[in-house]
Image (spheres, rainbow, N blue to C red):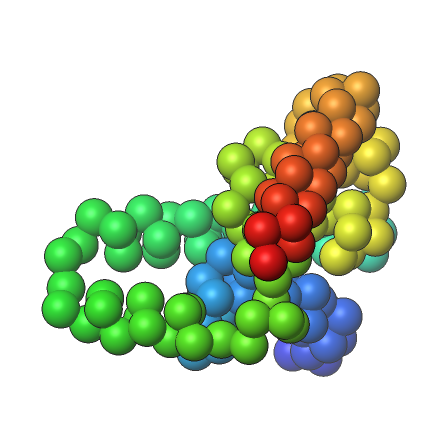
Length: 160
């Protein structure tokens, strides 16, 4: 891949990839690391893309997988620095991240479709292709995910 071509791909995809990474990592520096790892993987193994939508989908799925692997490793490894990270997460601006945090708390099968639909603007048909599943399944996951969010967000408002 030529340098100019890679730079253009980076310009098109860096922002959505960073947002996906931040969604998982909840930390700017770790999200940046995952972003870099995603683009390194693209340099090494990216398939030929069938348009910008396919390209963006590949980057989002790859970034998600990289972040999931990092988080699995993080949870398995016992470190004293983990307490610092938990404190950072606790003290974030509550208003700005409340909904986002609730999305992150959803089970994986609801979290990813919700993110792709509402934050990246994919249709349920496009999400089904990205996740290699059926479109009615994606619509069900979106509906169930929304219901879960309504319960958790609505419940918090009623308790205050």
